[in-house]
Image (cartoon, rainbow, N blue to C red):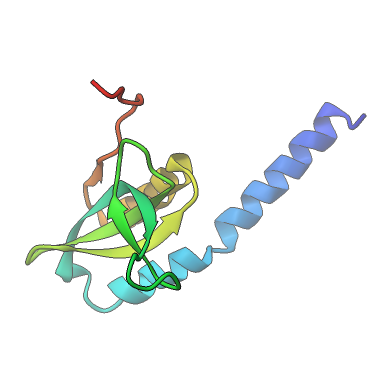
Length: 122
């Protein structure tokens, strides 16, 4: 059984690696924002669900579904209207962490459109 100190050291090392080595999603967001951060004014997090395309089974489409999401998307909110997806992440927690990092970097507000507690069918 590993000691508590060894476990904490491993966790600290993993956290340090995650901070110093940006994820591929972070590279993509930086590429979208680079050179023109004025095009965007906020960050949004939405729950998303993927559905098969009835006309072409090899394709699929995604819809925002905050009640029963399969994954979570982070969007850059465009000043002129609309949004641009910059990351798809498996959990709400990871999506919020990622969105907060971008929001802090550019001093943008963060809008989390996912309910904090699951909604029932009523």
